[in-house]
Image 1: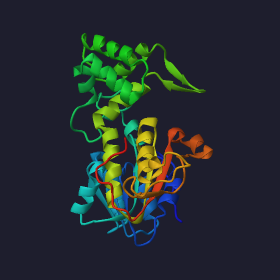
Image 2 (image 1 turned 90 degrees about the horizontal axis):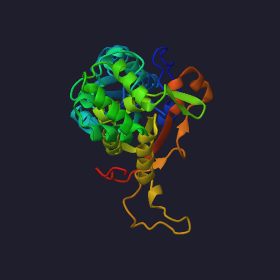
Image 3 (image 1 turned 30 degrees about the vertical axis):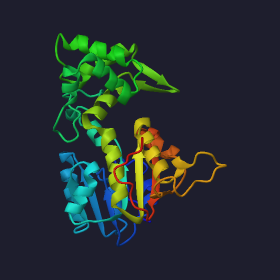
Image 4 (image 1 turned 180 degrees about the vertical axis):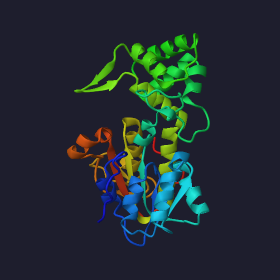
Amino acid sequence: MVVAKAQIDHISVMLPEVIDALSPENGKTYVDGTFGAGGYSRAILENDVSMLWAIDRDPNVIETADVLAKEFPGKFKLLQGCFSEMERLLKESGQEYVDGIVLDIGVSSMQLDQAERGFSFMHDGPLDMRMSKDGMSAADVVNDMDEEELANIIYKFGEERASRRVARAIVNRREEEPFQRTLDLSKVVEAAVGGPKYKKGKKQIHGATRTFQALRIYVNDELGELERALVAAEKMLAPGGRLAVVTFHSLEDRIVKEFFKQRSGEASRGSRHMPVSLDDGPAPTFDMLFRGGKKASKSEIEINARSRSAKLRAGIRTNAPSWGNEVAA
């Protein structure tokens, strides 16, 4: 099986493991639901597949997609939109079913590296964070939302224990001057947390990490998008089709884990001593490729720090009808 060499600047996390899970074959059709820098797309295309549909809501990826379209004529097309709209986007393009789907959840290193996108607390830029460049920005959230709502967002989506202290600091500062730049907000949050860094085991993370994560997730409705994308993938996969999902933090992974747990029938197994009744619920729509979440190799983590928190979960579509719009809790 051919695996494309990862791009130097923007490395696709767990690329060999993802391609192994998808097992792309000649004559079959695949979807890269989070195109980004195109690493997974290129690796899939180099296995001589029939067609690769890429989806991304970020208009900045069009130039990268054009390169692949020229390199693999007739076998690649970018569909601009959210991956949660996968079913509509594909069917409007005449594609009823596909043989494999990969989703790489969260913000890409390419977006983080572009200071003007406003995702990074380490590089100064406008406080934006919008992946699709429309709708409410992070600046709108921190400048307009009331203190309690802001604290709830930071706690829920950032798992920040000092969320109320951070929210109060933001509200107090914005009364003097509204936030417009990333480093300005980063410094206020860092001071509110009570120290320059958190300790997480032997690793250290910047004090603004959790708050910036929370704002990014909220602005882009990332968890809602993920839930809807999983349901869409279940509908679009043909029997025997494969779904591979890479997550980067516990909130994302919890949703994917519960989705596969329910859809594979694991959730209905109460006691190992009590057999599962055939009437307990819908038939399983996925068989798991492996148990638990697979992690990146030590050698990959050494060259790509972003892969440290990555987890890959994957399943094979059964021939059972999809569960519809029911989403894992």
